[in-house]
Image (cartoon, rainbow, N blue to C red; front, side, top):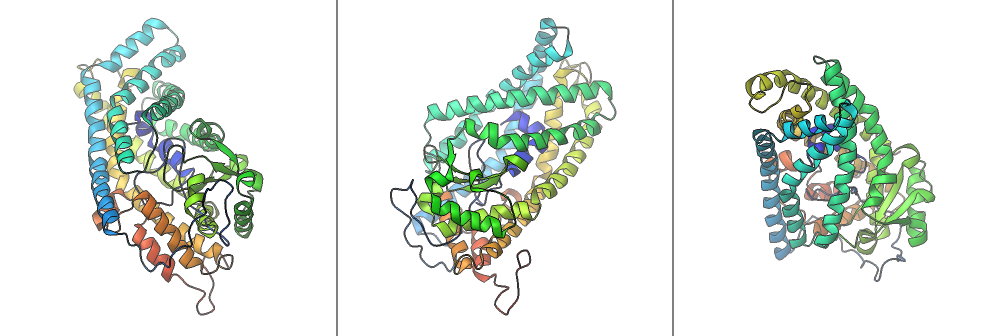
Length: 455
């Protein structure tokens, strides 16, 4: 449980939006590396690939052989249980955090260490973030165990631990900033802090989106210019980018060394303004053809062209505003009920952070199905855009898209037959079977028509 990200769901969700994954799988990339997939022209051998992908077979539906089907079915059950138990585990941990009065202990240490509020936060925030994340570490360890057991990850435990430590450093830095702003606002305006803190988080979010590909992602993976690794793929991607009317020159297309940690296939568009770039994982180059990779990148480009990032930013901002307001309404009652027993003096007490987190975790979990439904809608639109932007660039682009989703499903172990309730609650993307079907049947050009987004 990354506690800080749970508290400030807005920041966490938007960091995820920086590079939206194409896969329907619930488990994707490690911290700092988002996911998504592309496609484009005839297959070209990659300079990083020992053996180029085989000629794809014709796809008529998303299917898996019996042994792989059972494997995905088993993983699907684990992911559903994880979806249910993870927030429960987090709430229980926070409850014991309050019962053990860890927050007041950290606050007292901070107050003894300094009289200045800023310095107190510098002491309190790392203690709070690290303690809650360490208490939640069993969930992360279990998730990594599952990914290793199912072949999604090949990362050793030493490397994983080092990544976790680097992630904690990032969490602590963000935590200091957010906790400082949050409690400065609460102390200044106890009745409207929820609104002012929400406003303050918006520019910070934009800054984080800008900095992620420049500062955060390189902490976890190695990046090199794609043009040096695969000139043919770079040219195909550039052709798609130009057709999309976007400005991402070859200098901002990167190869990422994912194979040292993962078996998953991904490519994504990330950043904003001068930090915007296309990233292709080396695993993708080894397992997909160039047309398939360009389709996935076309999907990702759709998120930018269709303004999904600002749209989802606005939607989640509204959701978070509502959550903050509900937390505010319950905050005083909660402290009046148990604050004295937990050693919390007031709303402006740093020790009250666990109460805020507990309440916000409950409200955001309730909103999760709605958020996932919105995400699936935007992902479907991006699929449609990917089909349209590659139409005419790639022969039989619908079949190529279906082949890309088949590869994604096989590698990421996407279950072919999820139930409607599973999709509603846990899927941020349409089910892979539905994406394949849409790719094979979407054809507005059949009778002389045009695409909805690309004419």
